[in-house]
Length: 311
Image (cartoon, rainbow, N blue to C red; front, side, top):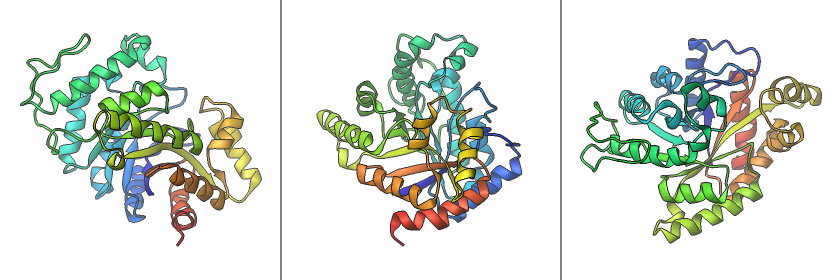
C-alpha cells in the first residue's frame, strides 16, 4: 500500500491558505516519501475551499518528485476545454507528473452557479471524458456528442504525457459507477468516508469482472482511496472535540457514520483501518489532516506508516 497526501484546501476551522504553508506542506510530504500530492474540487461549498487546480500549479516545484493528482476534479462544471487547458499546463510545467480523477461532484450548488442542470451530470460526465481524451490527442477523431464537441478545436501546448495524463474515474462503488470506471477509466478512485473495507472488497471484485468482460486486466488496473480525513491523538477529549467542532459541521454525513469511517484517535486504530483496506484490495490511500497539518503529517509517517508496513 502506498500513501499520498491531500493538500489542505478545505477550511475545517482556522485555515489561512498561506502559499508558503502549502509549499512547506508539499515539501514535507515529499521528504516523508509520500508518492502523491492530491487536490479535489468545488467551486462553492459551505466552508471556504481553495481552488484545487490552481493550488496544484502553485506547488509544482515544491512537490517534486511526487505525482500531482486530482481527487476528484469537476470537468463538467469547469467545462472540458478550460479544464483540459489548465491540466495540460500543469502536466507540462511539472514534467508529466499529473494524474487526474474525474467525477460529476455531489453538490448541486456547483452546477447552479455555472448554469447547468444537476440532473444531467452523469450523461455529461460520460461525454466530458471522451472530450478530454480527444483534446489531448489531436491526431485522433474529434469527439462529437449531445453536449460537447471538440471538432475544430486545437489545444496547444499539449500535456507532457503523450495522450494526456492518466484519467481515472471516481465512484463511491455503485453498480453504475463501477460500470463507468470499467468502460471509461484508467483507474478507480473510491472515497474513504463513503465506503468500508468489506464494501470496497465487494466492489473491487465486481470491477474485476466488469473489466474482464471488456477484455481488460483487473490485475493491473490501479485504484486509490481518497479523502481519508484524519487526526491522530491519544486524548479522547481531543478526538471528540475534533469531530464535534471540525468534522461533523463540515462533512454532510451522520456523526456516527463519520466516527466509524474516519480515523480520529490513536495511531494504532488508524493503522488497523488501513490494514483492513489493504486486505480489501486498496493500493493507495490519500490522507488529509484536518488540523495542525504539518505536525499531523509527520505523526502519520512516524506512528501509523510503520504499523501498516510492519516496520
